[in-house]
Image 1 (tube, one colour):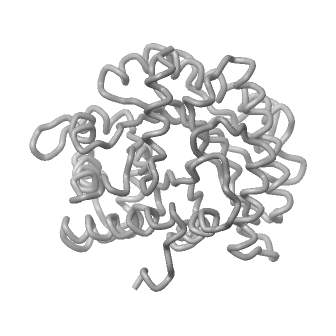
Image 2 (image 1 turned 120 degrees about the horizontal axis):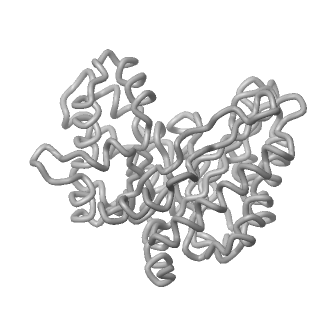
Image 3 (image 1 turned 180 degrees about the vertical axis):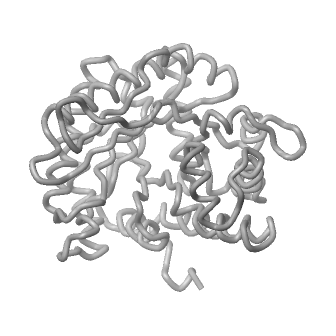
Length: 336
């Protein structure tokens, strides 16, 4: 384990003013999104759309890293340069999704376990040699009657820790993503409780597996009531509760927290991050973003209906808004 390299890259990913673009949608998910905007979901369409995003002029001022999918890390830019090489030349670290998906957890109805540990060491070795410097593994936690179970929490926490240890052994900074889903009728207090449980279990498992926390990052959900809950909380309450939950359950020697957007609107994702960074809380970690839809939704729609430059402008705008949120300098008036 090269501790120095891991720490340097982890800190680079959360450099002030910059965040991570999550462009690691699976082939199926990306194809569905292309179809949703009226584009035939071919391999070339997926490559062309993503390459156009990566080529957005000046995006490196707001983007420190890009999470890629296996298909994408093997593709080329329009000029024939390998995508990882192109990103590195722009001072953007290439990352890679290494889990193989979430599947039904045996004997536990309605719950899932993320798979992909088999063969992970060799995959990480290959990805590092291709230019990747960090990785992502997503656990999926559903809130409903009687769930999540302790079995679901412990199984996913163990998998996240094993993944993290293997990644670090192979030189990749692990992004640890235990996502408590927004779908459901649960209130914010229930989201808080479940998030605290999975965070506590995950970092306990990481300790058992010897994970070097200063060379890792956390990608958590924010504390938000379920989408079907009738009692939604304010943006200020989301920020306050999220910070409180993280302070109580996340090691202080972690370099940074890169939030997932998780189905929030573009503006909500930016506003919540902005509030957390503008509150006088002085958190021990950098508070940043690792957004997918919240950075790409407008860019994808514009790519389908406008010019490549229009799509780049839409992406650059959202990246700039979230860059400002890193320092608490975003304002709603900047959205017009």
